[in-house]
Image 1 (cartoon, helix red, strand yellow):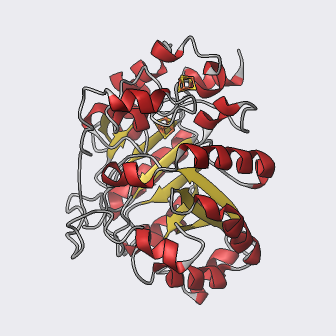
Image 2: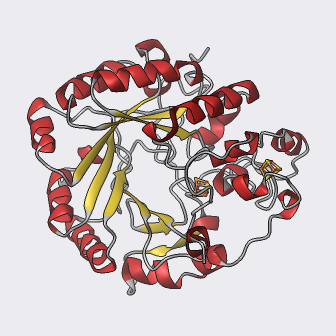
Length: 369
Ligand code: SF4
Ligand code: SF4
């Protein structure tokens, strides 16, 4: 059996587990995948988080991607990080940098099992702050200065606004000895409302593909651009939607979803507070069993590029109102655009929305060029 076939059938434990510790955030990025802002009062307690960590250790989950919201606003955040690493679960956490002080950076420098990702959406304050809010670029740069030389990651969601800045992002990462991580904008959370305006144009997709090919393994992508492999040569990675097979999300209230970009009832597999805990959900959920069963390619199965693109991203299709067995909305052959033009289903709203109301909320993209 090929490795990819093992992954398609699902594994005993996820290899890419995201755990969003809180919906609270001090920023209000227009494309936030989890519609974060306000803390959910049902958030898992410290004791419940510890129990989840102990379970991950028993399942031999070697690391967890921690996000939010802004995870560092949880009062017990650093305590939970230490608890995880002392239980053999490494932590990679994403942050806007606001709590990365010089002393915290020193602590991180000495900790091999904790990886930091600083999020940016522009290589300049002008581009970044339109998406992430005034002052957010300066905050991230201050954090990067503290973290210089620790081998942290600079994490960027590629949008129409910043697709022309990939070289500048690389230079910024190099300046601080960081590794650049580029990921795809999916229409999840608040991004449902801004995806039309923010997702890269067809011409930009081709440029991004060429750039990724030229930079190969030196830039991380979390395999998120596999739909671009249909341009020709496949990008490095598995080229597979891992939702419910090797990927899943635990949200701040313990709900388990097939993928961090699929926070919706349609992809809700269970809750870690249930008697079987996280392992019970991962191993016995009916939804995950369905996602791990052989999937037909639907309208994409006759495509020459099906083996590398496989119809693209399930969440991107779902949240743009397209059928799950059809082409990705950003299909490089243009089939997604054609399907969007005649779609019958309205794009669904995210399951939960913890956004805070902002002064500029008359338009979610107010201020964007
Ligand atoms: S739904 Fe999309 S983002 Fe989630 S695992 Fe599948 S391809 Fe990746
Ligand atoms: S038709 Fe389907 S498989 Fe082919 S490139 Fe488009 S999304 Fe990918």
